Image 1 (tube, one colour):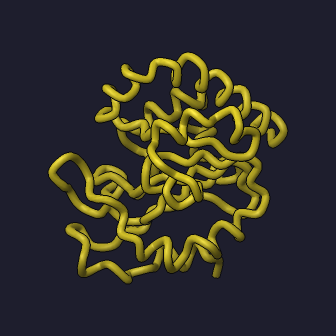
Image 2 (cartoon, one colour):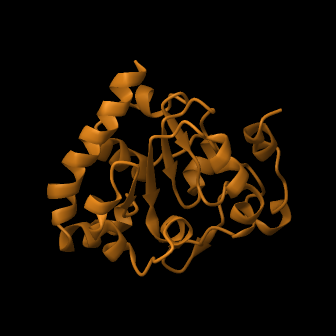
Image 3 (cartoon, one colour):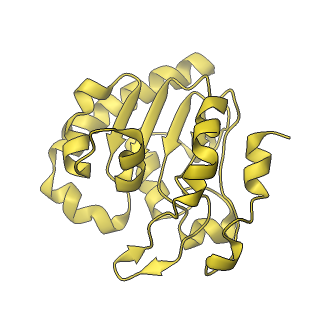
Length: 190
């Protein structure tokens, strides 16, 4: 049994989650690109398919990849900070419960030992992966110093449209480089 199998069977938070536990994760230890996200949406929880929602549509657009490529576990490991839908809050989904990262993250990141690029999406993932995190905007602005191994991205949620409008440099300057970096890795695999 791999760590992924163990995670998929995890029920630690089952009684504390509005829809119960349904851990959602993708990848295998051949994956070359790791997506460090936040937590599954309700749609993802119900379909048990990572980024199977509007955020995923935008993320795949940012990466310029098809669904077939995105859901290939030899290419993409999709590893949120929490593996189950945390519930709804006042301004969107609740934050990922920290228990998942505490229990699984260190071992999980070691399991994905062939990763060449890590995409760190949103505040909670960035707080974990970057020691000097101050804000999503400031972390994302450092993209040139992070590549080729890691890059901070805002969350691709439709709720972030104001951030994207305010920070037009992101889609203009970062997305083309992100696509090039991603496609170099994908081309080597195929």
